Image: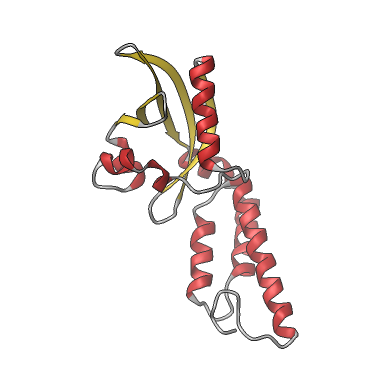
Length: 183
């Protein structure tokens, strides 16, 4: 479980070594110095990550605690869904926040995998594959393979819609796949 202590302004004062394992980095200070490198610009619900983070920090300082789901990402873009539990504490006479991040990847994988889900997943993978297996198609499959739940479905539908637009564009005589494979 990732644990960090932040000052009242949201700056990370300390973080445990779990940051190294969770984000695949060599030193926890990399995360502590640039935490927004490990958060997508938008959370799965479409909200701005930086704004939402500030709101949760303020709520924790005001009410004493806060609990919510959050999406981190590794430097390679692989998503890390977590449950965040934040509590206000006093350290050297200053209000601070201690935050615990529980990695939900294993839990999501266990609860989402069913035979019906597997069949849907295989159909989705086929529907979004690039006609000539260009790097864009592989990238799209990589993005989808790491994402769970409703966010996965939204992304798959968006990519499927992009494919549909590309096919319609080709029918009208415009060349080129949106993923730059030339199909």
